[in-house]
Each structure stands twice: as C-alpha cells, then as structure tokens.
Amino acid sequence: VQLVESGGGLVQPGGSLKLSCAAFGTIFSDLMGWYRQAPGKQRELVATVWRNTTSNYADSVKGRFTIFRDNAKNTVDLQMRWLEPEDTAVYYCNAGISYAGGSYVAGPNWGQGTQVTVSS
Image (tube, rainbow, N blue to C red):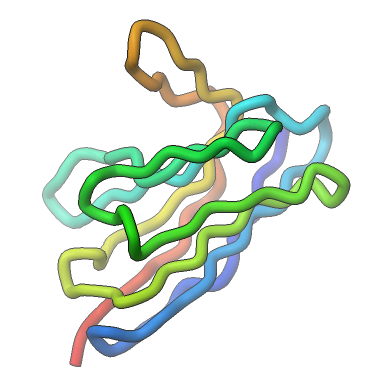
C-alpha cells in the first residue's frame, strides 16, 4: 500500500487547512486515520474513519477537525479549522488501523508525512 499525503503548510492561529491522503495499490482499508507527531513528542492519533464513514477524534481536536473518506476514490481527508499553535506537527496518514478493547493500534502502512505549522 502506498499512501501519499498533501496539503500541509504554514497557517496563522485560527486558520484552516485541509490535508489529503490518497491510497494506491490495495483494497482501501476498513479503518483509516490520521496521526501527528510534534517535535520531541510521541506520535498521537488525531482521527479515524471507518469504511461506513463513522469517525472518531482525539479530545484535543473535537469540534475543530473533520475526517472524511471517499471509498470510490480511495482518499481520506482531514479538514482542520480554528488551528492552534499546539496543532503544529507532522501529520501522517495511516492504513490498516485495528480497534479492539477500546483502543486503536496503528496499521503498518504510513504516508511520508506532511508538515503543518501554526504560527503568527
């Protein structure tokens, strides 16, 4: 599976960005998601979306981020609004996420990452 992300950049606090992830080479995974990793911090789960479009979000982004997928196009996008400096990180698309016992486990397939910087 190849995952290709796009859409990162520099934005002022309160601004918006949309990240896109296109999947190539395999059947689109049932559970897809976006993770992020800030400098000096562990990679964290931001949002997930099932094939039926049911979604879940980290508390820190609820109400500000929206994840959506297009199963026909094999894409997963992350619309980010009201961005804060704390959202600054490299964002990664992930495929093949598993869910059990209330916890998500990252899948084996990652994109190359796209930098999001929120700064005035």
